[in-house]
Length: 142
Image 1 (cartoon, rainbow, N blue to C red):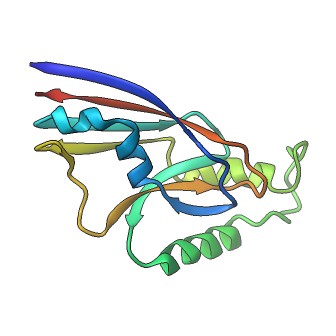
Image 2: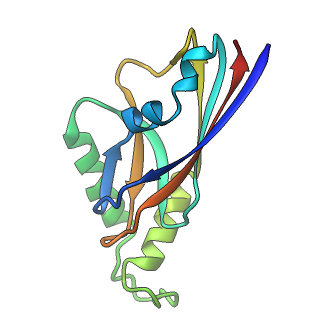
């Protein structure tokens, strides 16, 4: 039988950076355990933060992400026009578009089929962000 489950997850406000949220996501939608074969879709309802999958063990990877992306898309770029919410606003929108607003992860045998070193990142691009909302959708055969 095919099943669908959907939950909202309100993340706390995180500082600017790349944050592992895999456990928070799994805890928020325990119905994953009911799915033999299927998918989890994670969608973020914001335009100045994003999602990605990457290294879940060494925190220096997350720091290097932040350093590189901030150098690639600097706040002091002189041609930004959209600066109403501060100097980190437009760079946050561009950074979010470089990553993604949605992830789709396979579920196998009631577990996320992530690689051994993979984790879900919240990519927070604002210095003073508010809590972020995710929509978690699980679908598959039970």
